[in-house]
Length: 398
Image (cartoon, rainbow, N blue to C red):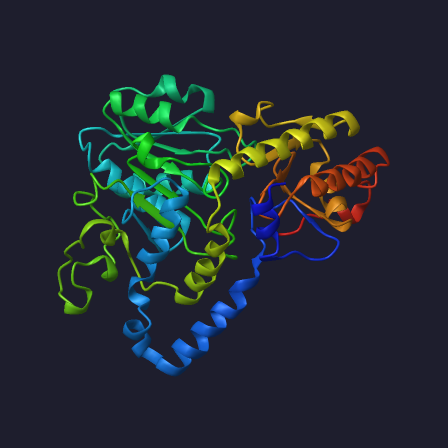
């Protein structure tokens, strides 16, 4: 593991005896977060009270943190803003994108997309009416389905179940050639891949920050609008902080300048403070190095599991370049297997109906953790240690 990543491991709280391979679902606690939040609470909120909106510059925090994320997703400065949840940002981005091609009514996605994205677009379609439809195809049918009826192509770059990776540059070029807009969900990309939104020509992008960016449970989402669209994008959620002059308290909405119009409500300052502290770990880190190491770790895991764990079937693309930073296997007893693993200190997760997922985040995971996880997984599978009722009882969060 490169020296840089040995340094970054020391920046996280990693419980003794645990191999944490679920950073693709929730990143570990950055050690700096506690002190950062304590400072915001006591020195800013505690001592400055409401004055901190100005004296501590809280009001610009969504843009300042957004600029830090922009570097990690290949976006232009001033094109990313924080706030709200990923589902809200999906709704905003897709709605704004439809406004650029008002004569078209088809929003195209695939059935490997995260269900919440599809739910939000289903709701948007109902709200818009006027003939709008959501068309969902298989992931490998997306490119062929892009035609002059499509208004917006809305995809999650990395499939949340299998890790399958869409070719952003190729699909964006195909979409633009057909005259449609693109919205990319980077939930499983930001902090895992060397994303290049600007070079790919993406129109809109959204993403969460509690996975590979380690912003904590419920951390605020981000939205990207390409600068060429920023002054024309119409925000369907016209919140007061997206107004051009929020404190003029005018009765009629006027959109703010550029990316500011994509703000909605009051920013979650404490959550942004945690995220800001988490992003310190990325200072000096090259995303190309992250990608290179995560692919090597994933390959090592796949090879070891297939050689040592009978009955597990690879659900992810075999070629590392075609997947994100998590690897999935299928097994009819996948849920019980994962619970048995968790009980033995290897934490991954399960996705219905039969997928067990393992994430490889080089900031804090290396080859030793991969080999230990495989050894324990081999023991669980070969000895059927999962075959107990306690491991089959489904928890509310899987």
